[in-house]
Image: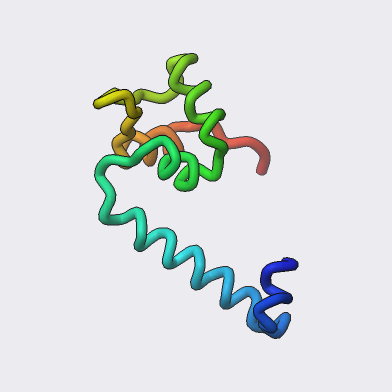
Amino acid sequence: MENLRNKNIQPSKISCYIEDCETNSQLFFENYKWMTTNEAAVYLSKSTNAIRVAVCKGHLKARKFRNRLYFKRGELDELIETSNTIGG
């Protein structure tokens, strides 16, 4: 919220601003078939360390090319879709 105050955005427009950011991030990732660790972390709203731990535990599948990990966006989507729901 502090960053929004610095931009002088009125409180009534904050929800529109957040929706625009979410739409832009969805459009950003739509063109990606392969993601780096950093991009996968942003896409899943996790830290890069959490992504690496998930790979080590076998929860997440990665490919290694030239000492970098790469993830398929479709597999990340499938991971989210098949995860257990909690609550309601």
